[in-house]
Length: 281
View (tube, rainbow, N blue to C red):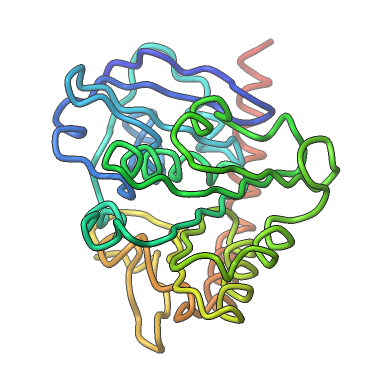
């Protein structure tokens, strides 16, 4: 069991959780993730590492309630059953910072995607490379951790679908106008957003890294649930990624695989809502 120091709602449907996990954060690098289990019989949930404190041994994650398992996670109070990690490979730029010191870097984040972007730009800032950021969400209230992000970037631009903050429109609208100024782009967010960002950067000839967020079960490459097709070859997000060359990803296949268990997820969600209703009686 791992002690939970905080599990608080920070926006509509999004929560921040802080966990005591010194062995997990000891060797963590930006770009990696963890698998968490709320209870002994819970499903494993892959979550990007949003922040960490190696001296205190604390791990920070942000997650969105989108189904039964994340709803169960949102109800956790003092302890969580399992935290496994750090998993996956670190971000390419952070892992090879000296090779990118003279490069112009831009991050494009969508929704909760700003959570895994934050430790990367924070790390770059601490090592003398300030990146630019374009951040998007459906509305102003869904733009997460703005204060923290704005402290560690060179320049940040916002786009909201409804125009409630920043530019009305999509992150790709802003990116298309400035893309030629950059040597490399990192994008993290919904699958369709990352695909659209890659379409823009490919047009401008800008190297692009995407952080894939497919279905994941065991985090060891054994189950095959997180298989992606990269440059025509099978890769597993949990061990080969989660980051890949965005211009080599088969996004059509990736989005199709994301819907594999939609019906089962719906059934599980209905069962859990029924269980909650019965417990409230």
